[in-house]
Amino acid sequence: MRLLERYRSHSACVAVIGLLAAGVAGCSSGDTSQQAAAEAVTETRGPAGVVPAGLERYYSQPLEWGNCASYATSEDAESAFGSSALQCARLSVPLDYAEPAGETITVGLLRSRAGDADGRIGSLVVNPGGPGASGMVAAAGLASRVSGTEIGQKFDLVGFDPRGVGASEPQVECLTDAERDADRASDSETDGSPAGVRAQEAEEKEFAERCTERTEHGARMLAGIGTRDVVKDLDVLRSVLGDEKLTYAGYSYGTRIGSTYAEAFPQNVRAFVLDGALDPEQDLVESLVAQGEGFGIAFREFSAWCAQQQDCALGADPAGATKAFQDLVQPLIDDPVDVGDGRPLSYEDATTGVIQALYSQQFWGQLNSGLNELRAGRGTTLMALADMYNQRGSDGEYASTQDAFTAIRCVDDPRVTDEAEILEAQRRYEEVAPFLDDGRPDGAALDACAFWPVPNTSEPHLPNVDGVPPVLVISTTNDPATPYEAGVNLAKAMGGALLTYEGTQHTVFLQGVSCVDDAATDYLLEGTLPPEGKRCSS
Image (cartoon, rainbow, N blue to C red):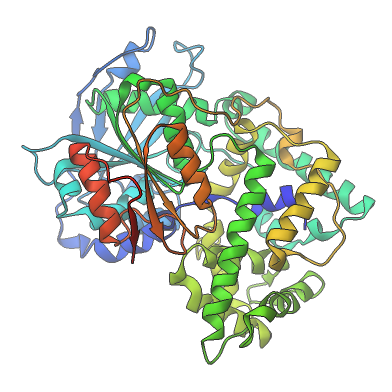
């Protein structure tokens, strides 16, 4: 197993709501042919609150809201944006905040308006994580869930695609659709020999070069793609929406956006719900190992559930599930399964499909079916799960998520270049997530970030949030992607309240658990935090 390569391929922390949003929106939008088209409207609500010197024209800009159809850049977005009750717009921000009079880029926005215009509190801005996931798609899916609730009545629900992502312009562009298909089909990262490591590093170097060459503004865009600059865009958005203080719900990596914003703009925080937290102090290696432990626990939970099913692909004894799984997937390294249209199910795709399914118990039945199919020499279901994770549409086109994920991570974290550190991290990862051990000798190949054209602009640290009102952190006991203790640590670091959800899934807010939703709603509307030690379950 090549840990850093696995991180680029398998470890985007996207909230479950982000994974399910397009389907929810598509099912909930109704017959759009009978809905009135969204009326174009130009609004000027800013500037509101504190405006940094030199940025006045950005903080006071009008927004031209209109139909969302032209903003869709993926199949998921096309489905999610189907309701004409939604409105979209573009926010102009500086390419480089050090040169606010220079070139500009745009951030895509989607809004579902508050049901109670007279009682409206303001906007609830959401981000589903990634990094690189579409906040517009997530907000479109959430719109139907909050419709008729107190949140939907009192807040405009606003999602944004962070700079370089989705409908924001320009997008980060690294691989073509055909190149990404080829990358997924190759299991070269399993070759830990010296020659294999050299080949992998050549591929990673080429990936970094392609990102620089194909992304508009090149290295200048890549230098400003990280969380440091995303939160500056978010503060421009707050002002333009007319809110003196920001109300925000961040999932997964979106919690890092939240803590970074609170540190940069402490005077502008109203209320933050941070669900599925990243530990603010964990470095890349520690974060990877902790995440591996989370997936290891989720796999054991799945194995125990599976053993109770009559057709469990891993057998009736959970103790043998890891070996049974490895016996199924490791042969794919040498003999991938043809799933049609010239596409092979590789080892990487099979394990990616499993990772996708471990994000939520809702996918466990599908995962068992996929593993049974693989036992019979078929790979359709696992490939479909891997396509869902990679956001590959039925037309073969990919969303920008994976390219943006790498670009953001490469400037959000210091690069890891010490071979001994890489090998030790891989050993630790295999220890906590043995089901993902590919059975081949490890090699210390560097990833794309080691060849990135610009230095990192952020690094993990304890945020200085003096003066920030208490935030609400939600953490799930068996979260596979962001372990429970990360939420405990973030709540402590930010002086906030911790709400514990007992379950096995990645994030929970606004996903149908009334205990969680009621507590978070009270906080967002009234500022009332749940009592210390509050726990919820399904």
